[in-house]
Length: 69
Image (cartoon, rainbow, N blue to C red; front, side):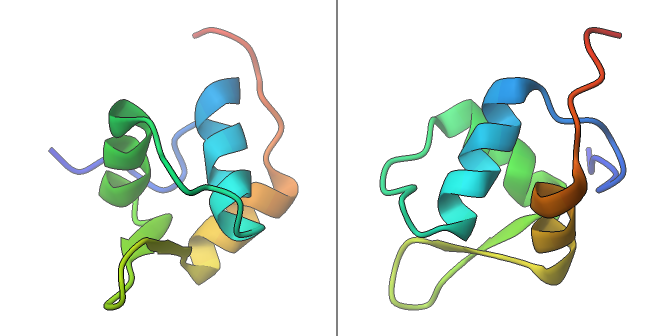
């Protein structure tokens, strides 16, 4: 089931997204990776690893955690 890129990330997922953005996310927690891929915020790079999409970059730069639902 696809998750909207407008859904809120929890603090740990947001930190993982920011680590990928800044190139320090070498080993991503599987559950975070799956959420970020499903939301279209990151994509697998052809040479290995992951890169942040334009939507992911915007989310990483502007997102504020809003607390539990």
